[in-house]
Image 1 (cartoon, rainbow, N blue to C red):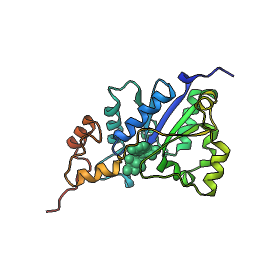
Image 2 (cartoon, rainbow, N blue to C red):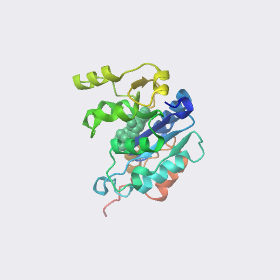
Image 3 (cartoon, rainbow, N blue to C red):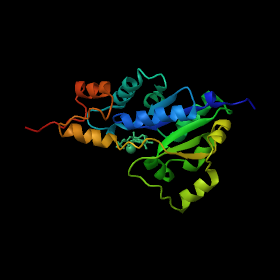
Length: 222
Ligand code: ATP
Ligand code: MG
């Protein structure tokens, strides 16, 4: 087996990023520094057209993530889900990433606690550790309260060692505490819909893009 090291791990965070905000960005940056990897990759999901926010397309969410990471070498955006013809299933994305990096490199998927708590509803969720490690980060307002199924999953996969994750290609779940930031995309959409500014919750270029494209604004019926 090829030797692996911290620089070899591919670490990514998926999400709708509707819009991307400082909770995502700070999380990704702290993960990058803690794991000692070169970059963390943000992968916006494709949202079926009928479920998109009025006026905000997958391409616009992708563009906002691009603007958010433009001047941060530790973060990058990957357009594979938005550009794909297939629905955004994490399992498909993991298979595509794994095919790209080969069997030996660690592949790590970062999930906020809210996403982790809903993991058992994901397509093929029990196979996820066959492809990657799962790094679970805290999210204000979400307490780890697993049901029996999730408890069994964690018993089978949990590690407390970053070294284990960085030394193996996949198979483990590692929980990590970082700066808790109580920011959500829902909150930003609600602020904008009320005509209030989301400034300092997301990067200025993202806010400018939202204004330019009138995203999340509720049109008054007159
Ligand atoms: P929405 O309110 O629309 O659900 P969101 O803020 O939850 O948006 P998502 O795109 O749904 O953002 O989340 C993508 C990933 O980022 C998920 O794993 C989620 O748990 C994580 N995440 C989002 N916001 C934070 C935050 N403030 N702190 C830590 N993790 C976060
Ligand atoms: Mg969410």
